Length: 218
Image (cartoon, rainbow, N blue to C red; front, top):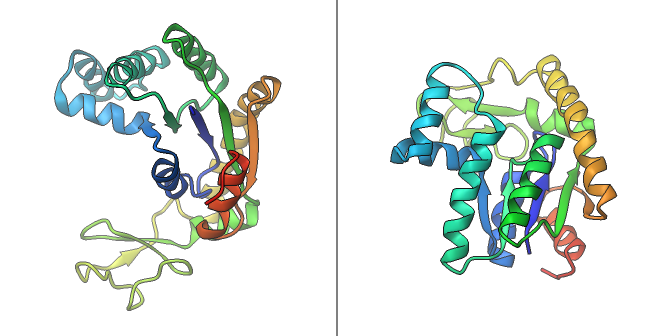
């Protein structure tokens, strides 16, 4: 099974991606991770990415697609054939490029899973995040608080709220996401591949819904 995972910031994609990998044996392909790994390894593509990033430019869709091709080809040659695309595609152009790439490799997207969360709950999740100034550990005032308020459990550093973790900034981020994701949603709907899952509740409640949506049980 090849799965595209969609959802706004705060939807719990990272948590559910880990569980999907464990449950279905998928190989998680996060474009962010692939870009960082390529830069660190100084591969030819990695050197191109490093140059683009050093100049403060966005990595082009074509370059990301080339990086995905490189990784997919290697994994397919090694016998891996079930992939979870995490963080990509983010827009219609990327979805079309991904489809072209997969067709050239004789595979395709089987389903596009969208985690649907109400705006109020997204606000609650994102506004409650706290970060350690010393070690970068993250907490949540409601869902994962430290043992002592304002103090990091790991290193004793001060916890703070990031400047962009406020209602105005988060509202802007969600509005941009909604605008960008709608054509992508319509694209996968037209192909009959979109599956919506209510992700308003905690992760342990949401994952069984995901499993059932994919035709399985936990």
